Image (cartoon, rainbow, N blue to C red; front, side):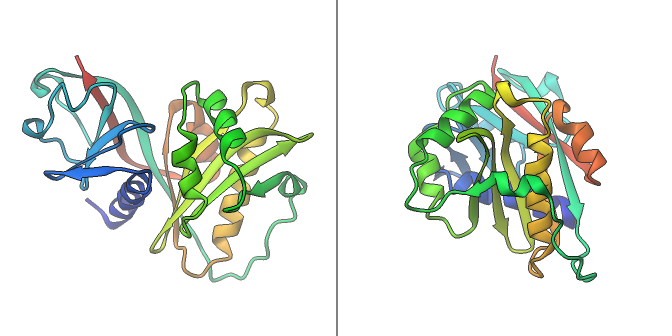
Length: 231
């Protein structure tokens, strides 16, 4: 596994761990949203997974999966693991993007309820507002909202681990799609990361829907993240 991929996965591990994850026998599990189960290196060892422990959760693993060896599990979906290497040494000033004024960062005194509703609408599943609320006091996390006339039109979370800034929960509320909301949030996060000498790469895990946007921005595919559920 190359170092860029390792840093991408470590960022994902640390981000998921910050979402109230429990750890037992080498396996990390969320008691509520985002309902993930994984091992730190995102390997697949079926002897540590049971139908009971995986109920209503997805197990995430990296690389190719042989469906014939899943022993009661089945593939739910795939994400493309991607990273963008930054050049922080050219002292390029922050882009003057008019959409930046629409983006706000929630602080620890804000309520995460409306942001959670918007993100739930964008992704089509229910998030846990209490879990998101905890992120507002996490110094590694930035919870971002794209605002249109007082409403949250788009959401994103950036999460820094060492020299890697991960992008998570990037979504657009259905009524605001095809308006450049996701691209504006991406530009904002990448521009901000480029100003930080401590950040050398931006990482994410892409669905097919977002793949074109990320490739256009210079992200490179590294591997595949597979989600497994009980058969």
